[in-house]
Amino acid sequence: MDERRYRIRGPEPCDREPEACIWNRVFPGEPRTAEELEQEERVLAVPPMLQVKLVAEDRRSGEAVGFGYLNTDPETFDPRTFWVGVMVDPDHQRRGVGLALAAAVEREAKLRRATSMLASARLEDARGSRFLARQGFVEVRRRWRSRLDVDSSPPLPDRSAELARIGVTLTTLAEEGPERPDVLRKVWELVRTAAADEPRIGRYTPLSFDLFLEWNRRCIATMPEAFFLARAGDRYVGVCHLDRFEAEPESVHQLFTGTHPDWRGRGIATALKQRTVEFARAHGYRSIRTSNDSLNGRMWAINEKMGFRREREQVEAEKHLPGDEPGGSDVGTRV
Image 1 (cartoon, helix red, strand yellow):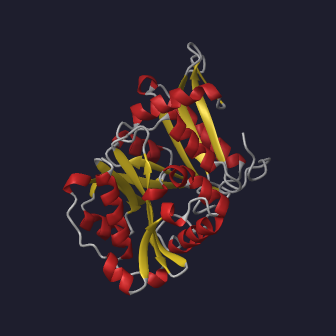
Image 2: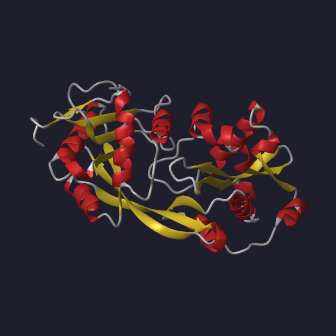
């Protein structure tokens, strides 16, 4: 990178719109607004999480032309393992900006005594995959992103009566009370339990209640009628909910789907997913997006039965780092 032309600095409030613009140029199939990126950043900064962002600036114009990221994973929290990423405006690529950002991000990881870094690249993005390989990353898994065309989703039988016979009622957060702390805590407890054996990189760390609320703040507040639950007696045993895309108004995102281990194998997850399709169809959404780990064969089987089709495969890779750096800062230090 020509340091007379570019410099690496910390983030500023004026970077929000350029960040969204660059994101949408680099990832055209995954649009984001500045507000959505800010919300994701807020979640990743909930203690004890750590989120660091670096910016590449064009000295001539003063504009942000690239971003580097480093953050801990909410579900596998390890203060010495970080997810990292780099993106550069296409007009400024092939000038060493990405390499400079990657080196700066790795320095930040080493300052925090990181032992490994995780990163991802779209399988069809050969340049991105080569970039990771040159940085010393080795593929460890794959993740699939899939989409369901609501109008072409095959009809599935309504199993609510069958579930009722075994004591399970399908309901929504809107009906249960999104403002009730006891309801939210029961949903949180279900999510913590149901997510424990979901395939992932790293050891599972249950979400704290505060992080659960922040992670789902928007859909709890604006789409409680699309937050579907299965209730057995006074506890929840299944969940599947949706969130909106501001940058993609014709689609909704199907978030976590899970069933309590004691209630699996009874069609609860499928019934809840079917409710999300019915909701999307009734409210004029054209498609539903979701994603899952390639090792989560059970969930993919449900998705495929419902009509989801893979549209993107993502390579997830890891780079191991040497031990503690002399003079490193305390774990959790922010920049």
